[in-house]
Length: 109
Image (cartoon, rainbow, N blue to C red; front, side, top):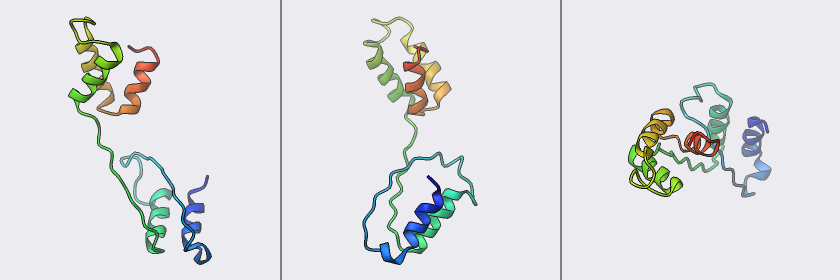
């Protein structure tokens, strides 16, 4: 769907009192000034649309290690090498949970 659709929807005075809810996700390091998403968000703000933006921070190394231990069913005592694997996956993912789950579900584990 085109991002301009959302900007047009936000600027249509006839739809000003019609509630709508949009959930989206993007990597803020990939959306620069002039990107269509930023333009659409600015148009929405100018037209009085209430925007709630939530930053999702990367997971910590400790959180990712605990998660892997839950996936594997144990710590190093139960699953030898799991700490090394957790460290490797954290270094590769830098706390990005999507990458982490992709790596663990695609057989990297």
